[in-house]
Image (tube, rainbow, N blue to C red):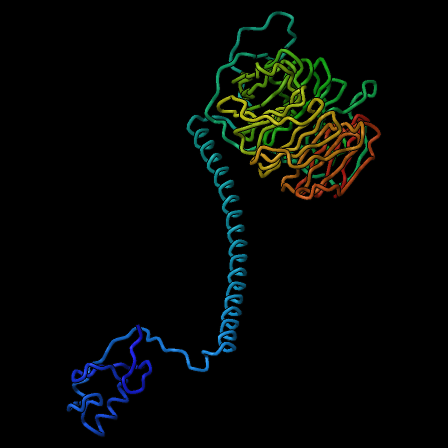
Length: 477
């Protein structure tokens, strides 16, 4: 309720009350009246300024002027208020958009910082454990003593297939580093009588070294700078279908349909370990980020997790309900889960610590030939014999994009660059897609045979490839 001056009949700015008449007055008006008459204006009783009592009002409400009570004036007032509200709303929307952008940037920085902290924490833990146990890190630990081999073994390395259980050091990120080479070179690295390079990898620590496996059963390490073969590693009894270069040691790994996984010393040029984790063809290899463990898949329907320093199989698991051969395997960047492809078109995601199948991605119509995780861990790319590449969102567990390739296109290799900007597809030719838009940006068709391996250089400046035409090619992007 508003106070009204008894003299002016308006809301007073400085209200006060007369104890004589109990009426409210504007102080300046009543003081002037008292100075002239000395009495209360309402009942004529004597009144002085000292008798007036001030009234405390926080926000006096002044009535609108009489001119504002007309319909046009009211409409104009409403229009002005509407305009003010719209301007305020526009300002709030701008502030909201700015806040969203700042929050998104902050969350991205937080996520990146958490990943770096996690990696550094694991490295510090591993270093402390190595220091405490005086565990050598520069090379492989010699295999544990085993009964002497039978006569006539000819110095064949020890073969170990015993399962000794899981260890707690299984929380690392995928080592998916590739190296960069700047020129294109065509050179037959493997035997011409049995043509074909079936797989390749680049040395993460030396951009000049390329590792290949061929149909001639050999593993070859080639130095691009010196333009010569560093080592030809022989020992497999069948073609070599998977190879990996160790990120920090002069050691390479290979797998073959002869059911063995071999660990080679590049400097010594010899096989230092034979791991028999499977009873059938080994179809896929993936090295854990620690550099100490290998994941392998096989046509015997099992995946295996092996310690490369001791040569022992830590665990070996199959999906008994599915009962199908595994065609490929790849670690997720966080090292806790991995994916396998199957001969019946399924992609299975496994929890490594629990050794359980946690998700399945159906959708392909042919055996899965290759899988690749993006470096941020959000996306999975899969290729199969249905001439298509499918992209899966691991957060929503669904297929959000299918890239239909030419009829009879054979997908043999998939790889993301380390920044997650590009996806390369190797097969009937080489195609490079830009992520998010998933549109083709580059196409190379120089190989005269199937492209069996592709790899990005640092910062996606270069792309290397190997094919059934026994050639290595290096493209500047």
